[in-house]
Length: 369
Image (cartoon, rainbow, N blue to C red; front, side, top):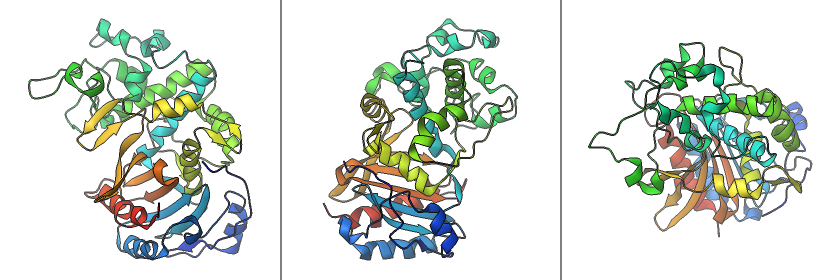
């Protein structure tokens, strides 16, 4: 993998509706070595077509591509710009996974088998007590496959995130959830690939943030700043907070598009950044391999989505951060490429179809192997 170094901004910043001004250019210089698409083995024709397509889509705000460790394409749309903080919603759940990995690497958390409820003796469940809850592990929440009845895609689910947001204590909300059942038309975990049954649950990711605070004895935002953001040169990140004041680790962390690209490049580099080890290679490999099957085309790691990108015979296994609005941060190891696509097209039908189309129909076909 190509090593990352800091250099002056050497390539033009594109913009759909806003040309980056000189002041912005000066402020963001030094983040990446810049290169032309053609020098990185990417055809510029499909990228121009992609840019035209993005302009016609709803609320796309940025598209960035890096290959061989160099920034080769950067474009902003709909009034966004390089200094804009992008709220990628649940795409930043993956940051929570990275922070858990760093805490494990440092010996602050014993491992993914650590039992979640043991961190909260003051919040033990009153509603629906069940001894099986005591065996819920960090890995259960990292893989969206705990035994709790929690499904954000089901408005009737007791654990639906919208029900959590209207109460004060989100950890207590989660611990009080009942154990879910498996009616005859669903596949039980023991009969599923990897022995787990997927159920998308923001509440579990929220609890992971509280575990981080209790295990590290640091606020989540400070732990992230010291051990992840500052070493990556990320100077600004805007967290949301729970009603009780803990950083919201279930999504909503706002970052610049270039900084999101750094997170992807860090994992493409197997946890190294500028020759510094930020995340262990073991965590990178473990967290980005399949642990639960989502559907016929998608698997899930530790808060990473795993599926192929491209069309026809040119499909490549990819590792993704994904969030409401169609937000995506993609790693394509076989192509030595990372990409960021941000959008504010929240809660709309086809929001992911838009950014999938940009990736599958234009960006992946533009790359020469």
